[in-house]
Amino acid sequence: MRIRKVRKNEDGDIIAVMLENGQMMDIEQAIQQAEIGNIEGVNVGTAKNGRKFLRANPDGNEENNLDNLPQF
Image 1 (cartoon, rainbow, N blue to C red):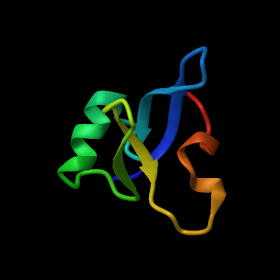
Image 2 (image 1 turned 90 degrees about the vertical axis):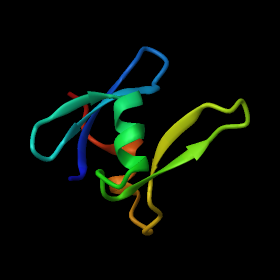
Image 3 (image 1 turned 180 degrees about the vertical axis):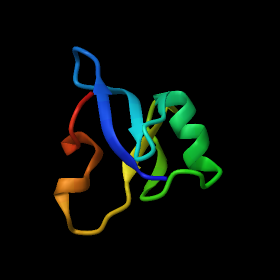
């Protein structure tokens, strides 16, 4: 499955995702699913403060970056 839409909070942080099958999950669930390989096209990074986050795999196409996906 791939992420098709995102939900952001008032600060612009992604707090939830919608997969191509319509399934929605909060960002923590999405990170866990990405770590075990259940979400394609993304990887998990770790910020300097130790917080994990999702990011799109680099492919030279900015349109499919998570921040640029449609919101739901």
